Amino acid sequence: MERSLSMELVRITEAAAIASSKWMGRGLKNEADDAATEAMRKVFDTIPMQGVVVIGEGEMDEAPMLYIGEELGSGDGPEVDVAVDPVEGTNIVAAGGWNAIAVLAIADRGNLLNAPDMYMDKIAVGPESVGKIDIDAPVIDNLRAVAKAKNKDIEDVVATILDRPRHAQVIKEIREAGARIKLINDGDIAGAINTAFDQTGVDILFGTGGAPEGVIAAVGLKCLGGEIQGKLKPQDDAERQRCIDMGLEVDKVLMMDDLVKGDDAIFAATGITDGELLRGVQLKGSFAESHTLVMRAKSGTVRFVEGRHSLKKKPDLVMKD
Image (tube, rainbow, N blue to C red; front, side):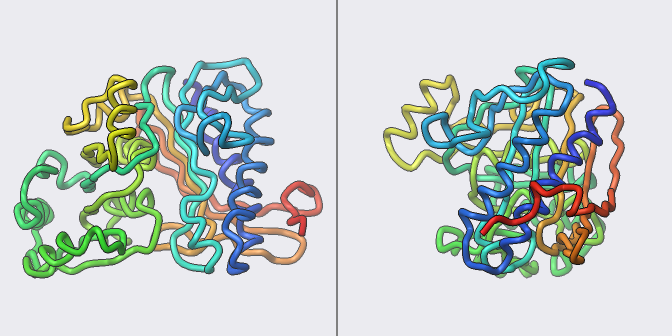
């Protein structure tokens, strides 16, 4: 892939974040998602690539745009898989909460797992703990491994996990081990990525979230030298059959190279609301300010990009009530 694609992806997530941010705290999550999706789609059309959505807003009959199988880009340039979440954390945006992001990832064609829209059990860590974790091991063993890898007492380790009733037992085990917990309401892509940055204070992610989000997080962690492991968790016979139809082994532990193959992948995320890693969009009347993380696995380059955008010159980003 061309190196210049990294900054092109920034343009896409910036547009989505700005468009969605105008709905922050208004209690309208669908409107926030629609605004981000529409903004992303318009910018995608200008990008020199031949993209196909492998993870998007749903199947063709469920999503008007950015649906699985949709072709994106100008039709020139590299052939790539696209994984996209215009708003990770629609409920967060609706409530004006913490850590909502606009996020996407690309890799060479055929290199991203076409993950079904179902639950995936996940464990994720940053670079120091790579090779030390095991999704099938007890919670306390993984906490001890991370503590040793990061030269910490287990009491100093911080685990992050979605605040859901299904995680009650895992939360109990983390607390009994003596580790600390940062519960998150939504957004486990951000939670997984945060494990690779010291300033977030997060050491490990546990828990069950969306399988598509697991693939996007895997791209980010591949860029950062981190690790994520996952196991698909179908909730009924129909979901189990869908895995079989897609050639996926339900009980298999999905490692990094199962989720994203090769070494050429790009990840970009722009903050919609404030988070540990990214600041949210700031609206300043005639302009907006954005904060974006963009990374490329092949070079190991990690950039934080601050943007200032004239809303007068970008009328498509102005909210339409």
